[in-house]
Amino acid sequence: MRYIGIDIGDGESAAALVEGTGAALPRIVDLGAERSMLSVVGEADGIVLVGAQVLLEQRARNIEARFKSRFLTNPEASVTIGRFARGLRDKLAPTLESGDCSIALGCPAGWTRADRERYVGIVRAAGFTNLHPVAESRAAFLYARYDSEIGLSPGETAQPTLVIDIGSSTTDFAYIVEGKESDVGVFGANRLGGGQLDRLILEDALNCSGQRDEIVRIFQTFPTWRSKCELEARKLKETYFQDEALWQEQPCKTTAPIVADVHAPKLLNLSLDGEKMNQLLDTPLEGKGSQSFRQRLEEYLQAAVEKTAAHPPQQVILTGGASRMAFFQTACREAFPEARILLCRDPEFSIARGLSIAARIDDRLELFRKEIEGLFREGVLQNEINRNLPLLLNELVPILEERIMNRCIAKIDWTMYSQKEQCLVVLRDKIRQEFEARPSTPETDQILTRWIGEKLTGVQARLDDLCKSSGVERADMSLAKIGLRVSLNELKTSRRLNMKLSSKGLLALPGLILALLERVNLVASQEKLIREELRKELSKPGGEFARSLAGDLEAELRAQIQENVDRVEVHIS
Image (cartoon, rainbow, N blue to C red; front, side):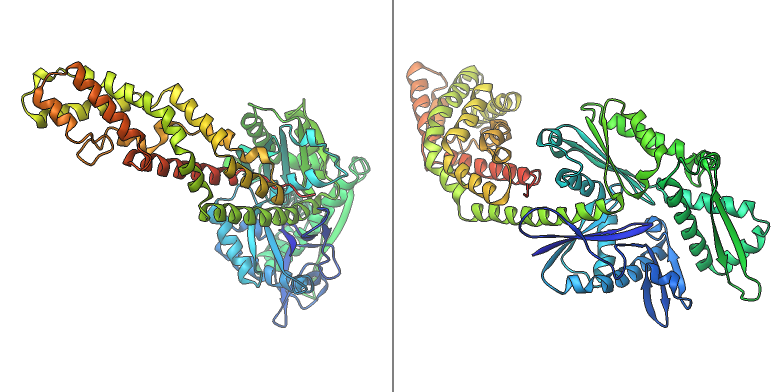
């Protein structure tokens, strides 16, 4: 099995591959003649073209770019994504067809689960198989963890870390504590990306052009030319940010030809320098609140500061093609002054590389889940509980017996009731009130926790073996750690103590309570007899209480083991 990460960006797209064994060092997969390609799609003679092919082919039509940023708001963008994915599938055909592959497809962290599933469905329909979504910010963190050039030590990966991935259309955040996504997890800004600057640069060029009205009419009639000009604006922006110092005073320039009419071609001049870039950063953007790019960035960074306030990040990792922008780096340093700011090398490839690592990790994790399910199917947990249940009953029963006798039966004034049925109702209510008010005690909780940690050693040994073979930390699947969350009040058995007082119930005591009620008086000999029968009923290994307790313990521990499986991280070397 080989693992592929596909990063379809709003501006550029890339793919990376990592082998199923050996070091986690992804390599970039060539997309035809390109290592990364522009996220642009068109057609010529019915053939789908993507990337540089679109701009080189004079006959290309239906050219579209910036489609991913429109995915949530424009239904037509889904069609365009499908077209682009088919072209990308053709580019990746040699890699996909040379062996079994598992593919992780990058999705913005701010997208909902439904958004991601719909997006994956569109790309899958283009011919991709064995595909699943992964948050792009998670991919960035995984790349930073395994990339030797960033150089995070094991101790540093355990420190609170914030990954900020700024792409062409979105900015994603991943908050990592102790090497794992925290409860805050991933979050994102769907309205902030470098592509917004491309549109501002193009709009500025139009405003400076003496042919603005004519060019706007061409854009409206032939949207392809707007897409081509916006791509020129993108390339100008990239040139500017590669050496900002050079272009502070001296303008960085380019010219976009517009040949909608061969008899009347137009030229659109685009230019950037330090002063103009600052003006563009403070220009109101389209959308809610009319904030500028700089204001919107500060707002999202402040939200990240607040979300991570409990454990402020010790390091902030910046990635995504737009992370090269110096003002973005400065804003991150100002928002997190105590953190170390780390920049990814080749940030346009870090998401694809991280996605391929995620694909390998997720495949191993899925196998781990199946092995855990196999452990349950074998009855390992059930058998271990049943074998050691008498030891648990020996400690629990005396405590339950005292509570029922001293706090329920002995508290009732039987002389108040003349009918047996009345007495049964009163006794049932008394037990219900007792266990609802105080379902368990610290003592019973400690007994359960100690029993789980000390007696279920066979289950723990199997879990340890599975962890070792799958690259999971054994401490993450420690029953002693899991058992701390199992208390008597969480078990259905405790509720049955007050619900099943009948001739066949959990606390049945057939004949004894009825005999007690016939005499109406609670005398010492009867109390002793009731106590003995109660202890016998609760302690019986094959009795209803024992069976109920065993079943509830198995269900609760199984649920918590499975919950832990969803939180563990697979480590690959």
